[in-house]
Structures are given as C-alpha cells and as structure tokens.
Image (tube, rainbow, N blue to C red; front, side, top):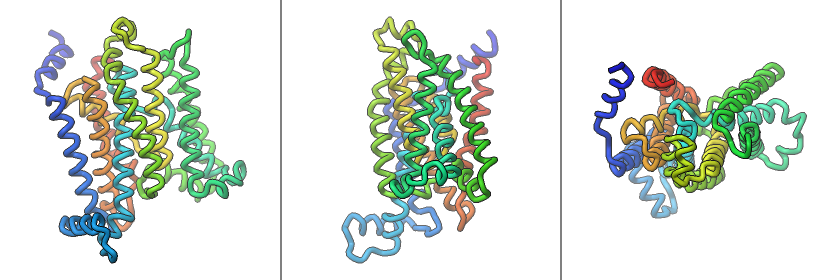
Amino acid sequence: MSAVPAALGAASAVRRLAPAQALALGAALVLLALGWSSTQGAYALGWADLWTALREALGGASSPSPETLVLTRIRLPRLLLGVLAGAGLGLAGALMQGLFRNPLADPGLIGVSSGAALAAGITIVLGGLWFPTLPRALGSWTLVLMAFAGGMAVTALIVALARSQGGTRVALLLLAGVAVNALAMAGMGYLAFVSTDEQLRNVQMWMLGSLGGARWSAVAVVALAVTLALAVGLRLARALNALALGEAQATLLGVPVERAKRQAVACSALAVGAVTATTGIIGFIGLIAPHWVRLVAGPDHRVVLPGSALLGAALVLAADAVARTAVQPAELPLGVLTACLGAPLFLAMLLRWRGRL
C-alpha cells in the first residue's frame, strides 16, 4: 500500500463527532469566546463586573455604572461585529472550498477582498480628487460603501469572465480570479506609489483589519448581509455534497448545478464584501475554519457550513481579544493575528494534502 492511501486510511479511522455534537461544540466555543472577550480590553472587567453590567443593562438602570457603559456602548457592538464577521468569513470559506472541491480554497479566489481593497485605496488616496462630493453626501459611510461596491464589481467581473457555453466553469473562475486579483494588487501598488505618507499609512491600516470602528449602524448592516448569506448558503449543503462527486454526477442526482454555483459565489461575495468593507481584510478565517470542522465532523456540508460559521465567529472573537490586550494601550491589527494563526496552519494543510494536489 502506498503512503497516501495509508494516510487516508489512518485519517478515516479517527473517530469523528456526530453532527449534533460538532455543532454544540461550535456554539459552546462561541459563547466561551464571547464571555472571555467581554472581560478583555484597556478597561478590564472581572466576571463579577460583567454579571453586574449585564443585569444593569437588561434592567434599564437609570444611573448605569462605568462597567455597564463600557460593555453596552463600546464592547458589545465590537463583539457582535466580531461574531458576524467570523460567521460570514467561515461560511464563505466553506462555500468556496465546496465549490472548488479543494480544501485549500478561500473566499479571496473570487476577488471580493482585493476588489474591496482597491476601492478603499482609491477612496483614501484619490477620493478627494475624483469624488470630492461623496464625503459630504455619505459622511463616514463613504469608505465602507466604496469598498463594498469595489468588492462586488470585481466579483461580478470574474464571474463574467468565467462564463462559457452558457455556464460558469469552475476552472475558468479560478484562473480569472488569479488574474484579476493580480491586477487589483498592481493597482494597490500604484496607489502606494502616488500616495502621501499619511494616505499610505491609512491604506495599510485598513488592509490589516480591525474591529475598532464597530458601531451599531455598521453592526446592523453587516448583520443583514451575513444573515441573508447564511439563509441561502446553508441551503446549498445538499448541492455541495453532490458536487463533491463531480458536476456530471451532481446533475444526474437532480442538482441544479449552475444555480448552486451562482448562489455559492453570490453568498460568499455578499458576506465577505460586507465584512471586509466594515472591518478591512481579515485573512485566513475562511481557510482554516472549514478545514478544522471537516477534521472533527467529516466532509458533510450539512455540518461543515454551520460549523464553519460558528468556529469562524469564535476565532475572530478570540483574536480580537488578544489584539486589544497584547500591546496595551495600543491595539494590534486583527489581520496580523489571524495571519500568525492561519499561515502555519495553511502550511500544515499543504503538507497534509500535497499528495492530492
């Protein structure tokens, strides 16, 4: 027996959790991360302080304590945005890996992150020259809306380039994504060349990602986008399970393959576009969360999709808590921490899967 089949046999012999157990574990991790993250920050809260603040907030105290104000006005919007961001990125990663039938795929393949980054860079560096009236019309939403529009536009371009003979070819989608992402990064390089020092720093800080700009209006917008993506994306589990056998076999099983591919791309673009426009680029969550879920619960997308959303939420919450406390009073960019976590895991995944690539 060769080394690869032997490794596969050893992996299949590992006992996996039942679907209900895996999802319960994911929910428990989110709750644990929420509780721990609530206590972390420049203004630290003990567990007793957290309990008191929750009681005051739910009871509508007329004179809330400083702990209650910190929790409800500063920390809670950030925590909810972290949950939504992680859930959206985790779901998008699971959808893309299912669509491409490759555990090394991530949402960046469809260009939404690079498109958002290019649009944000144009807004920061050239916005005053090209769009002088936008800040007066949109205020603080200018950068968010431009980044979201850029992500959607680049994704639409990649999908259009990947259409052939009345359908969307996954191989062309991948190749078009690589080419368009390279063009977007070339555009970012040009913007870095013509920007001032302040503009360059602003672009770099946006690209590193952070939940520091969380506010209730942004939470509401991201909640709407991620909820819609979850509602549609979770219904694609059966189609993705069938696509794992190949498009021809999935068609024979009665799966509307083209519609499933379009919906998977649309859900990923919507979730990642809304998250990236609000928080900047948070890398590797969509790559590692689905992989961990498959290791624990198997490849069934009825578990992988919701499990990836739960694990992604827990990972973003935990990373943000570390970002707020590791170098106090400063704050580490969230993307730095997720990259430090994700890059070694990505290399480990390459080593695990190199026999199949």
